[in-house]
Image (cartoon, rainbow, N blue to C red; front, top):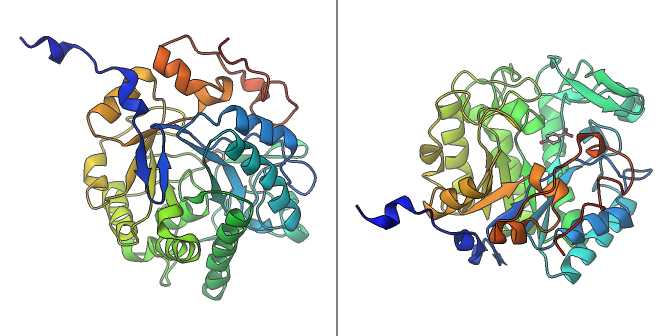
Length: 367
Ligand code: PHB
């Protein structure tokens, strides 16, 4: 028996550089986007957030938390935006601090669709969605957790302005100093609501067939790529998650086609949440390799990865990079800890959303 068969490759596979579109990254460890709900009045990031991201600049790539592209895109209290001059200025503090530490950072572009509440919407109006179907889900508003509101269906004539909001947000992200953007098309938010047939009952060009349900994703990605370059554009997908009350009758066909369409744009990367977001990695059979097949950009995997799983994913070629969420909350120096195989700090769920420096910028690094 060959002794090498039984020996796992070392963590060094995570510490080789890789080209991701226009970016050259020093390692394969990605900070996943994490909602922290610490934006100030006007949904503006602060110097405290700049410290938090700069502490994590050793990641190969930082994906900044989900950020609303327009006022209607907000679904939770104190999440940041990228649609006002003040918000662009707030994010400049973050990108400058990360770049000063040698890191690279992209912004996750977010529209929550129906996962919102009238109290968060301009004029107290109903949130928008592909169809007027209320999600069985809750959101967090100024007073605490509440059921999400009943949405109204977007008119066909409103879709060009929606796509324009994504394009403008991508331009704003570049103005704010981001190295690129990640279009959030997962976790039951707006684009995912269009993709999946439980939430999309439209009968126009954006509903019904897989071709129609993938149209918004494709048009948004094309508009963003045209604005900032395909090599600075990524997409996040979550084919099996039921997070925020989404489901599809044929996820394999839907997400194979989604990736096939995105592949024609030659995007920098696709970032896949495998299984239930933050939960069961294997809720039903799914062939991720088949989904990946047409795509030649970088493939980022996420969801419950530990050191051994990450090494295996990259060493086997199943993924190019691995995104860590929970471990990054409490371990600002996560790449070093993975490389040296040291213990990890344990994150405190009481400080995930909202609050101060505590549980945000005060987790210790080694030494
Ligand atoms: C959240 O705010 O809880 C949240 C945001 C974006 C996600 C998932 C969860 O993709």
